[in-house]
Length: 152
Image 1 (cartoon, rainbow, N blue to C red):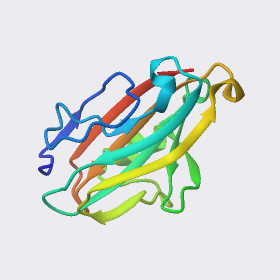
Image 2: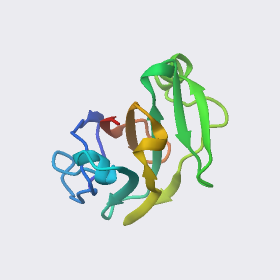
Image 3: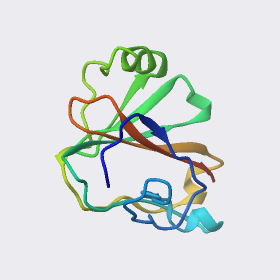
Image 4: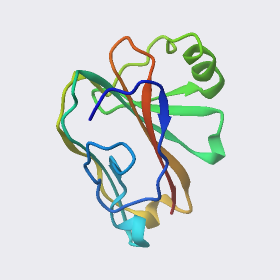
């Protein structure tokens, strides 16, 4: 996948599995598992091909009931909450809040990882969330941003 030259946004409807493509217009890097087609289980899987240059990857969740927060997945798969307003404000200054780390740092791919596996949707209750993936070349504030709205 080529490096982004600006902030590019590619929202798409949930899919069961990620779709790997070198074209950001057709790539669907985050799959939601069976729940994407009305199934009973949520599984979050990220699939990406090779990058032309090293990239930092960020995996972010947002929940409408807690819309003033973004939840960043850390490299150890823990999740940390940050103020949406602070993230947006600092990104305009080409930086992120202190403590945010990439989920994957300086990688060239490919990536095929299951983040959550077979979580019963019945245990989650009714949930609406957005799963967002950011790809940033290290130190460069251009991004490919893919968002997946998901209702359970």
